[in-house]
Image 1 (cartoon, rainbow, N blue to C red):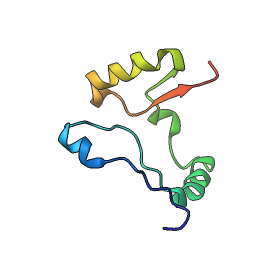
Image 2 (image 1 turned 90 degrees about the horizontal axis):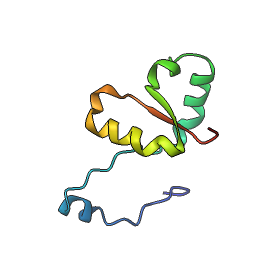
Image 3 (image 1 turned 120 degrees about the vertical axis):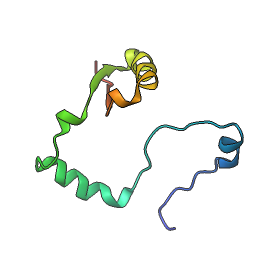
Image 4 (image 1 turned 180 degrees about the vertical axis):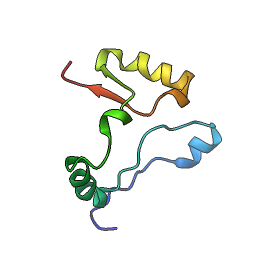
Length: 81
């Protein structure tokens, strides 16, 4: 897999400890096409973002997401606020 970073994390540990990992998996090859799609207005970005918070408020927002995951689509963390 040329050009692809492979994680050195022991994924067996996540299973043994019954940990949940929330986040995204990067598909680097798809980014140019997705960016073009977003820039063209083909996706309702504003409707997909449930909440925008500052980095200082991110912990609270993520805790609320954990309490009611169905109520949140995306939390945008604005590093400039």
